[in-house]
Structures are given as C-alpha cells and as structure tokens.
Amino acid sequence: MNVPHRLLTVALVALSLSACRDRSEAPSKADAATGAPAAAKGAAPIAPGALNRAMRISVNLALVAKDVDASAEQVRTAVNEAGGYVSQSQLAGEQDSRSATLQAKVPADQLAAFRQSLRGFGTVAQESEKAEDVTEQQADIKARVRNAKAQEKRLLELLSDRTGNLADVLTAEKSLAEIRETIERLEAQETTLDKQIAFATLDIRISSDRNELALSPGERISSAFGKGFTVAGEMLVVFGVILVGAAPSLVMLGALAYAGYRLIRLFRGRKAAPVRG
Image (tube, rainbow, N blue to C red; front, side):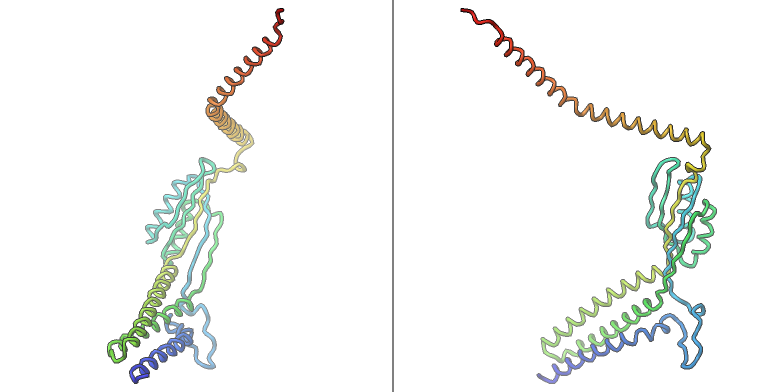
C-alpha cells in the first residue's frame, strides 16, 4: 500500500469515527439546538414549563350546526384568515343527516384564537387535543444534518488534493455520494417535522342539529312515514328496472314455451287419430 493510499484510508476511517462520536453527542446538543439552558451540576432541575419546547399539536373537534354547508364555509374562511389551509374536506348526507368533515392546518401561534372562533359557527359537542413533545427529535435531526455536512466538507477537501490513485478517488467519491444522499433524506425529515411543529392539525366534523330525538312525536311519525314512502318508491323503481331489463328474455322464453306447447298438442293429436284399414 503506497503512502497516499494509506493516508486516504486513515482519513476515511477518521471520518467514520467522527460520525459515531457526533451521533453519541447529539442528545447532549439538544438544549443548544432549542435554546434551552443546560442544567449545572448540583443545581435544581429546571421546570418543564420554563423551557421552550417544540410541540406537535393535533385537535379533534365536533360541531353541531343548523346549516352544515354554511358552517363548513365559515370554517374555511376562518382557516384562511388564520394563515392556514384546508388539506381535506368532504360533504355527505342530505337534510337532517347532512355532515361535513374537514382537516385544517393552522399556525400553532393562532390555534387558540382559531378554536375560539369555531364556537361562533355552531355548538361544540366534543373537543380533544393531543400535544406531542418532539424537542429531542428535532434537535437530533438538526445535529445529524450538521454532522453529515461536516463529513461532506472533509471529503471535498480530500478530493481536492487528488493525491491518491484512481481507486482511492472512486472510493472517496462513493462515500461523498452516500453522505449527500443522507443529507437530502435528513433535510426532508427536518422540513416535515418543522411544518408539523409550525402548523397544528385539526380534524373538524360538523353535523346537523336536527335529529330524531329532538322532534315531537307527530314530527317523528311524519318523518318515519316520509322515509318509508321514499324507500318504497325506490324499491318500485328497482323492480321496474329489473322487469324492463328481463323483458326480452321473458318474451323469448314465452315464445319457446308456446312453440313447445303446440308441438306437444300436435304430437298427441296424431297419436290419438284412428288407424284406417
């Protein structure tokens, strides 16, 4: 092994050891990445509420409104005014069974005001919130991105010397390509997580406030009769469609049955006729 080859091999080994060391130090850099002060030895622990934590927030909320479509449009407008957007939406049902579901992304710093505005669009029937602390996860990804970029810089410096043979250069270029792929993957994870932190996710369901229990006995009987009449009409339509579709086959079967009947009568008539001597 020549001297340049040994030097490049030693450098690549050193880079690998540096990566391992940086990964082991990543958790200790979490406070620096999030701006949180490190606790001194022997000092009292810092209260969790005193730290600026990175939270991924999701909210489930159910509204009851007189006009589901109008309420859904009001929610859309409020989302836009808060600086967010609606990622999914669906309207279903008719009249009393009308409902709407929306998934909204709202800036986390506007979440409290936005949730308060929703109370003007209907009655809140159910509400829940989940806040997931992702501070360490965010700090770990950022540290790994920094470490990968540092390795990329060192490999670029080694390749700029061009002192090794072709095999050494190819090995270094392969390592550089792998590191750049790792950087792209980590940066994609970092971007996704940052968006999840910056925007809270709200799953909102809006349903009609008219239901069977809220109606008087007469209204409930009238509603049941109307639904039964509708179902009966739908059944008649289905029966008519089946009958019309089967009509050609029924005509053909009838014609065959009639022809068979005529043949049987003709055969019996010939068999019953007297034989003349």
